[in-house]
Image 1 (cartoon, rainbow, N blue to C red):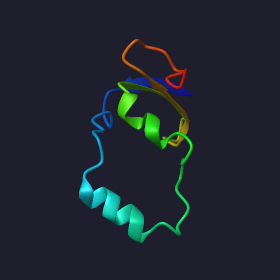
Image 2 (tube, one colour; image 1 turned 90 degrees about the vertical axis):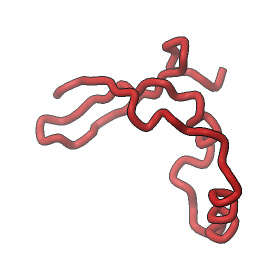
Image 3 (spheres, helix red, strand yellow; image 1 turned 30 degrees about the vertical axis):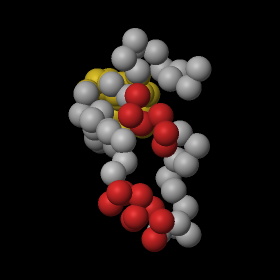
Length: 72
């Protein structure tokens, strides 16, 4: 098991009209994480746990203060 962190995939901004249009057209397809999608713009760092074969096992999102519980 390997561990690491990255700041990639942390540049979420507010959705523009194109994203809203795509979501409206594809509303019948279930979202991957609909309960926490609104938290994505708060993510500033990812902590990763990776299996020896390179498969990601776990990911934890941290906010700007380094907390994992951005919802509270």
